[in-house]
Length: 178
Image (cartoon, rainbow, N blue to C red):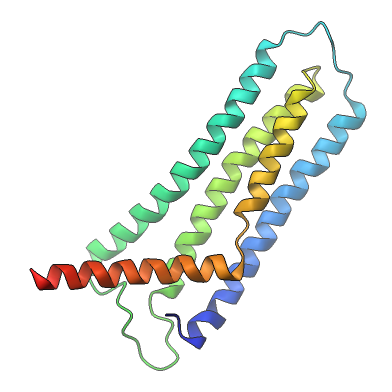
């Protein structure tokens, strides 16, 4: 369970991630409105590039999910290999312990995952803008919704950090019991 100091500490990285997420969504929506208002869809245009953009969108969803988790897992594993006590929840009064490190890991994972979705959304918007199919803008809209769903809430961030601390405690206690 996180201490009040740890919960307070998480407020700043949470706000930063929410602002970044909002900026990513705003960029996609802004260009989406430009594309919607000024594109001249060509009914005779090849569907190949539109299909490629839609497939890239689907791959981006999978990539975003996988890469963000790999980044988090590898960062935590590397930190604990270098310093076995890095994830220890033992701290002095007012110290946030490993929460600062975990907030940074979550932030990095979030930014990479959201950026992957943003790139695929822009790809679909550019395809639509240059005469692609109408479904390209729909795919971009779904990817934008994916970014919105990734934006952390206080509860989600606190649960993620608390879960990582609990997992570390369980692994340590398992290793000590052998």
